[in-house]
Length: 196
Ligand code: FE
Image (cartoon, rainbow, N blue to C red; front, top):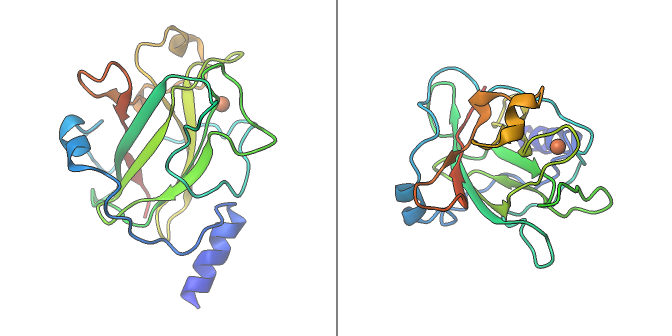
């Protein structure tokens, strides 16, 4: 019964997926060594940020959003989802959507849209492209995140050193990724802290 309720709840959220399962091998050990944590985990949940007009329900379940023909600089975003008690959260759902390198969303299909479930160590891994700028907005990736049994966090994540950050009214410096050193701005880390 509980499983059925959980499943129905995901559908209500538009995160239609089978029950969370553990995919243990999708974060290589080398990634973990190369990328320092974005922030110290504390009991402060990740800030919320606007949903925006382009979210679509029922995104595909996938970690690789970068496909042939999609414009933009390759970007690998990884991180860990923590509870407010700083425990890694397995089975958390992350639903990502973003513009391509030219600042264009796919609103008729599901290009650059996908959800995934954190592994047994609370980790996620998103292979995508660096989102482009569009009218009034700095560079950002949208995400809806939900720990098992917790509320949905709707937020956006941002990139350091983008001139438009300061003039974007939605920009939040607490939502900046951290670039991996030596990655030439192609690998970044962001950790989430979710209510659980
Ligand atoms: Fe947007």
